[in-house]
Amino acid sequence: MVLDNNSSRPAYHQSYEILRDKILNGDLPGGSKIVEEKIAAELGVSRTPIRDSIRKLEYEGLIIKKRVVKPTEKDLRHMFSVRILLEGYAARCAATFLKEDEIQKLYEYVSIGRTGTKEEIMHANESFHNDIVQASHNPIMIDMIDRMQAIIYLFRKTVVIYNRPHLIDEHEEIYQAIKDRDGEQAEIMMKKHLENDLNFYLHVMSQ
Image 1 (cartoon, helix red, strand yellow):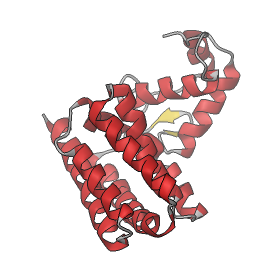
Image 2 (image 1 turned 180 degrees about the vertical axis):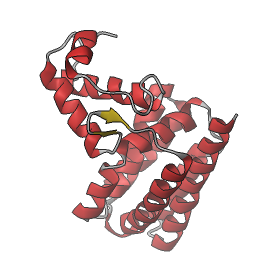
Image 3 (image 1 turned 60 degrees about the vertical axis):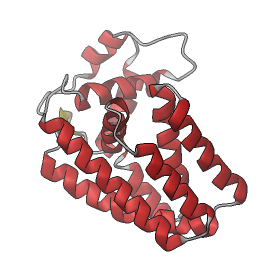
Image 4 (image 1 turned 45 degrees about the vertical axis):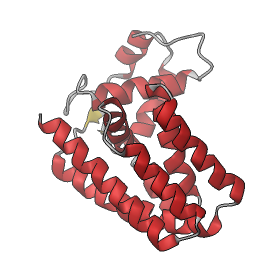
């Protein structure tokens, strides 16, 4: 695969996404050595965006000492239990701190989730969760979620591609609780939503 030179996204972002997908899809299995020169040649770019991509994937835990790490089911469950706690709290915060126009933006993401293409739904799903996480105004918590972005992408891609039942309905329930300024309900709904994501992903992967 060669990068799209006509894309508006920088080479670093494209390189990162391609490498991340290769790891998460199993094209670069656990234990594979990451060789900058080889990947740069395959993608038709210099080593700089590849080096930056590897650095980000190391930050996210998918590469250690230039080798691919493949998360086990136990790893995924551990990471998701942390995400459930953090995003549940963030949803509670969102009900308190988000402004009305920011809450309306959440509803726009829900609408895209019902009518958009797969790619549009993926982006709307990502934005929905990211906006809620940012509402915590807690930089340490935001950083912890950021470190899990590659794994979160793996789940997000699976639930969208395989059309997880009630995915967008659950987003709307979270939105409604935030709109009603009901932090407790927003937290409960977010935790339930993410538990459903995890269970659906593990079910799909077991088939």
